[in-house]
Image (cartoon, rainbow, N blue to C red; front, side, top):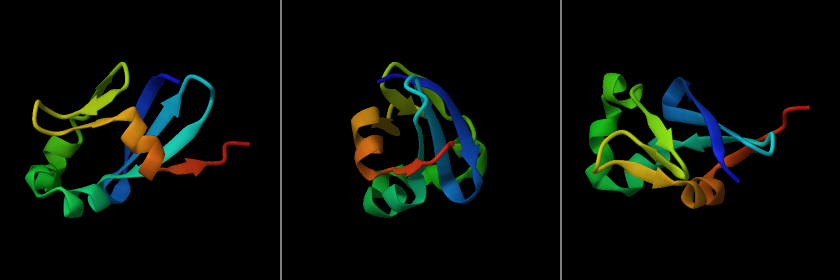
Length: 80
């Protein structure tokens, strides 16, 4: 499974589009509560700069998530 696109949604949600046509919503806000060093992502301007490469979603060297983490904690979106 590979990431093909990512979309910033309201309330610190990332919508990830995968190469098998799956769509996953990932609640980053819940992770911010769980991982204190990620608190800078509450800055909406920084949050909006999200990028992805291979199986990694990231903002900078300190704030990133691996696709496995996202799939484990994310919510699958029905697209049909």
